[in-house]
Image (cartoon, rainbow, N blue to C red; front, side):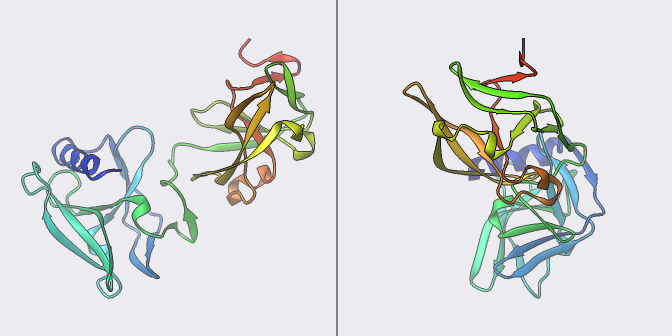
Length: 251
């Protein structure tokens, strides 16, 4: 999130408040340069936008003995409602921080998620953003026959897939590595992270002298809740053709 975007967000939150917010009793900690900059059981889920929440931390739960939180200057157009702040450990610091003093979020601090080294819910690391408490993942082994095609070429075929159901997203079909036609896959250097599944690595798919970049992914070390998909491969629905028991998805 750019400084300009943060400024717009601060103005909106002071004036109108967030899309939604609610208290969480989970212990939330932030690790920054080897110390816990904050440690709280009074964090709030704040939906700045409808898609997913962020954690906002009470000002009182920043640890002066380990990390110092300092307000620097008022965020323009907030009438003293928000201040740019700095979080510092010794000589190391980040200014990707906003302290709210007026409005619905008064007394809370936004720390941009990627501005510190690691966030924790209880003892579990979290990635990208907090998990939405109203969103869930179901991972179900299946014996339905799945065939993945691209441009009429079969890329993968199995009768032992894993179906991953994630709220508001299409079903994803994870394929055992021994059911992949590896002649069509090319390693990619791309990596992404998901708060529900962990860090993903990608493959390109090359068929008929045409390469389709980063449309296949897998998790070598998924999160505990997504452990069953470790080592399995998945392809983007809509980019490839997915046949379920001989019927193309969407037909």
